[in-house]
Length: 358
Image (cartoon, rainbow, N blue to C red; front, side):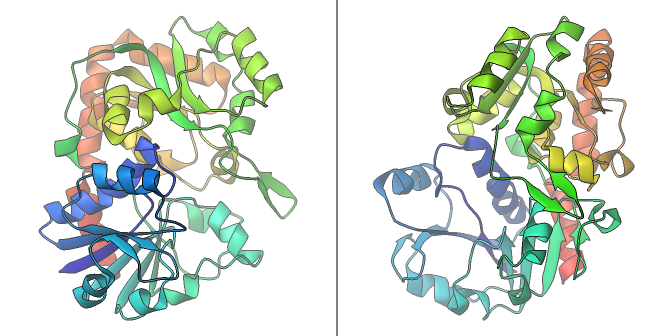
């Protein structure tokens, strides 16, 4: 089958984790034997964007200057003549009518549940009506109180296991993670505010005092966030530079696989909505044999927890979860990899996804 995947890998360059979130779909679908092309619309074909895109060495793909036929990589004519059987449009990034509407099966892939649905209800145009199917990594989205005007098919984030082998190289003797302090603004629906990672981490400020383990999140925090930076520093949080440790796909993979485990610092909106969101980043930690301790968004109703993956609701729960992991670390490492193999393997996840939309 011929599949066109649209997603952001270079438009905001030097975000290795965001790049991997898209590459898991591209490489995973190729593993299943499909003919896959990646297209990424960008505002401008800036040199830094082009350089980052070309460094990925994709088998087939194109940067497309939005609203034009100007490309890097595959030509626009080759994109048009590819004639895909399926479009997997991650976050609805591809909006070019000539490339979208000619495809019979058009899948909107939602990586940001709750926020996308509320923005849509408030009038934002994501092109949802241009798609035949709508898929989300919010495994409990249908059980939330947010507005839904269509069926959302739940899925797990895939991880291509051959690219994320079990790792024995411990470079950071700490529980780490990667993310933005604020990805965008909070949203409100039904008098409930669904916040960002900043709001969730503030609930966990005392965690370093509750555990003997080192905590080393790589958080992109603007220097102007002085109050938060001071609060983190005063309470014993160590911060890694996300550009340094995760600025490329290879650096991101080294940081994740070389960490003791993940302390997942989840957006408040996912936690408070109980939408069942599960992180593509956590999937990479698990595949690497690195246990994950993370806030419970409701994903524990869809994934087994307690062995290799432990969910928490507050700072004391997070400390207890970390303690449980380190008490029998070797066991939880093996359990983490086994969970990834059973539930998050791209062959399984993407195979089921294709069955659901075809």
